Image (cartoon, rainbow, N blue to C red):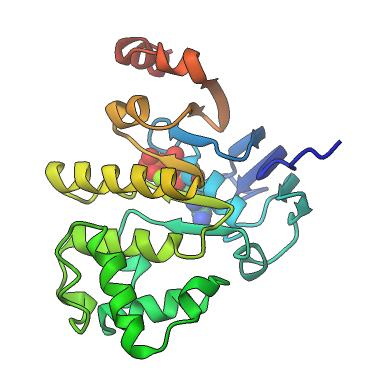
Length: 256
Ligand SMILES: Nc1ncnc2c1ncn2[C@@H]1O[C@H](COP(=O)(O)OP(=O)(O)OP(=O)(O)O)[C@@H](O)[C@H]1O
Ligand SMILES: [Mg+2]
């Protein structure tokens, strides 16, 4: 059988902060989760439920205290952030985290491109590279195609987040991790960046985990919805079951 391995497999994951002290806190309690190729998972849950901790342990910025993590069939449980970056890209809530403010738009793209194995981009020399960048930026629909030489710190939050998203996905990662990546944007820009996310995910068929507090986005986007509550997975629905979910049912689950 030639079955593709899961993009991510999390088994019996545990994370405890301040163990052995009065502040001991079990933030991930025996979490198991398998993400299949092409899954677009909306992750929801109350403040402090453990969503970001889950993403941090997947990315390796926090070590797991127990359990096993595999990425594309490789055991990465004890591997560094850099090692895992082969398979992962992340976009955070703060648009400043995904880009270098002092560098220009094109310098940022060059940096992102260096981290990719994307031959289609590497082939280009400077002149045609600018044309390629312009083309890529145009697809964002944020007016960035004419601002290649602008320092990124002068962009708006929405423009900067769209650029972060582009940079994170240039490498066509096996798994894209989005941690409330539209939360700091105004409603209209947030909608725009969400639509852009959908387009990029669909175009490249990216497997994606997206944390959001916006119930409407969690219901509208993705084929799967996971609710984290008090360090455990309370709900995991996909396909028709997700499509049939309604906001009031979801809110009722939150309250349980
Ligand atoms: N590095 C850390 N050191 C100590 N405690 C932490 C650390 N990171 C998170 N925590 C604690 O773990 C719990 C879960 O935090 P986490 O950030 O995972 O929640 P979340 O579900 O992402 O919440 P939010 O929706 O507010 O972003 C919280 O009580 C938090 O204070
Ligand atoms: Mg969080």
